[in-house]
Image 1 (cartoon, rainbow, N blue to C red):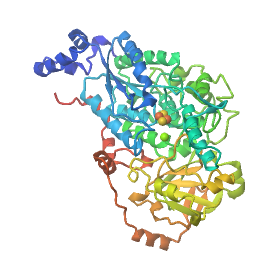
Image 2 (cartoon, rainbow, N blue to C red):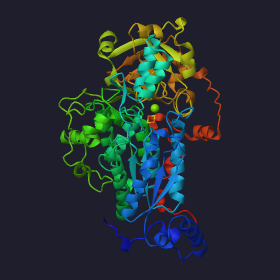
Image 3 (tube, rainbow, N blue to C red):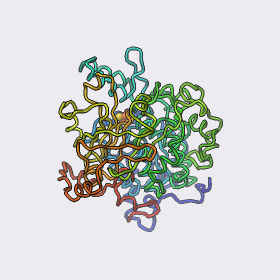
Image 4 (cartoon, protein in one colour):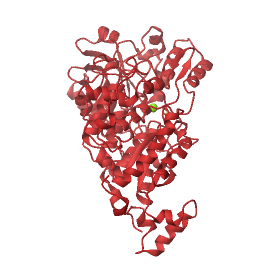
Length: 587
Ligand code: FES
Ligand code: MG
């Protein structure tokens, strides 16, 4: 702990104890002390700890934080800090139209503005639902005040007729069963609700569990925080310890810039492979890295993540859900296995104040069926491949989910050629997927475009398109799918997604036509429309950007400034603002 209370002045004292400007100081002081605090507390060199509250009635995935708040505040007070809870713009993955992804950058902006403009010395970031975690980390990276993340934890395991029913995953399964005529609307709803038995975020290794695991892998939480189920006693304890710890971090001036290094991001990429993490992780991690001023490229996912093994046996890639993952040791166990195999950099600093290797200690899997050892993984080479070609500069593919059956039938030495069928967004897909005129068979590649950051707007999770009902009934559960949007982290579809640049800004996908031959070459890492360069150029010359209709002011602001998924889908102008806490706002 480098700084002690005796020798440092807190940022909040610029508000509450500034004899150079008595007029403003009086205004700050009288209004804050009238609610719950004494003048002495505010001025007597206690740090003010903000608690960014992402939970609310509108955000059930994070609502557990409403109940954890007492414990967080108790921890802060016991360590000598003053807690001040504040709300940020809500994001609920399953509630916000057109997509919660549109709001990630808005929540980020709202956090940045609060942290910069109020008397705050450090912050607890409450996280959980998919986009809340990256938004909080992006904001903390931009401002660079001492910050620690605390997620709400996954829901308890869901069960349906004696089998584990995982968030999201059961929806995809039920959609298929409905297409096969095996269940109706009522059973569909009952199955879905059975997967959601308590407060907490998704209990599968979807985007929420992934991003919270990666927050821990980055070193931005206390060890073991990510996997504790929301209603467990240990979650309360972690809330208290996190409150205590942020005060110590303020005393030590331990900031995101000390933790969010390139080495930490590479660790996170490796952990993502080992947990079977979501394909939403690359854009979110890219966004956090850019706001932290760290150089991270989409190709880092292939270079550092592709060849690692999948260790965690959790839906959608495996069998179990959050409770089992927690009992098997959670993220520290996964990182302990990877570290022991020489895959991680154990020297990086963490929010615990210790280097990663020390923070992990002897953590290892205590249930090798749920968290496998590196020598006996669920799958080898389980990371993301980064493809290129004439349809996009980059797109991601989770090659590990290509079934053995598909490989045997269609992939000849890693090459597949098929016929393209192109949909203009999810409405078009739903309207036409069962249209016999499209001639969709098992050698078709389904494309969807207009669903990227600018197009949708926000980038929609729609690339995991289900084949037409007649193919599903014939047992064909997946066709290769390609798109400039994303796919749900709870889906296990062999999609090529996050294609950048997206179609509406003139990416190659815009030029594709139904009926084109398309060639996937996994050895070369390419996906190309088999169209002559002359024809391709002629199509480009004839292309007109589609007219874009905004429905809200934010949609227009977002579309004007957002970048592409490969670069994190950030507000590009915001990435120029780095470590801004040191520049005090005007009085
Ligand atoms: Fe919120 Fe999955 S929908 S965590
Ligand atoms: Mg989602």
